[in-house]
Image (cartoon, rainbow, N blue to C red; front, side, top):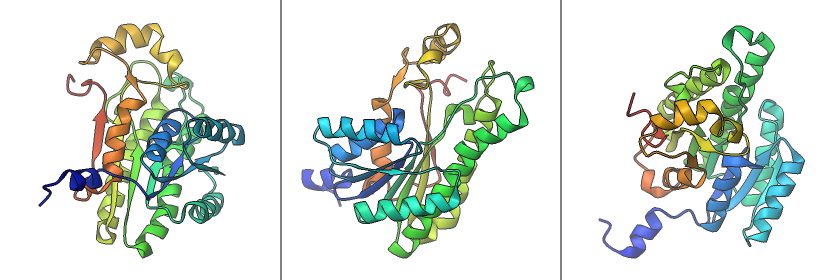
Length: 262
């Protein structure tokens, strides 16, 4: 029975955990990494762009937050394996994986090329699988771990303007999350996802400030505002901590109530 403040703090704590974050060089991944580092975790930021890693690590250092960077192309299975080996060497082991790497393609479905569609799927969905697989291969012999995938409410409902490839990739992440949770539960690996709504990041700012964002999207958010990356932190920390030991296979919407409104 949990009955002391110390027990509560420990329940939600991430201190000492080895955390690998893909897409950690910017946006959501960067923000989540800072929160983990502030909580005492050993953080490895994985990103395909060395310049983004360098900028993120400088930002962390400015705030007195320790972290390490590893270049990782999530579409290259062999490269992912090397990156996870390097990350594990730097942070001890990978106890937690947060999959943030991804891209968006804004284009009407009838104008998508097959190559464009495949590229989004390759990075967002196949890349997530590659990283889950690399982490799972380490977590199984280690006796367990936590995986948090970044999906989107677009994995549940469509949007009038064109994001067919992106929405398809996020729907795939939802099912991948449930499948891996089903397969790996016996290994004490919790696999969950968050499904953000409209979150302001450098990648999404143009949409947030667009006519569609302001006139179509914002009025459908029950809390009446666009989300910020900090709005995602609490749920991800929960899913990475001991507080979520009996939670797996879930996709948690963090969308200001948009899905609830239909």
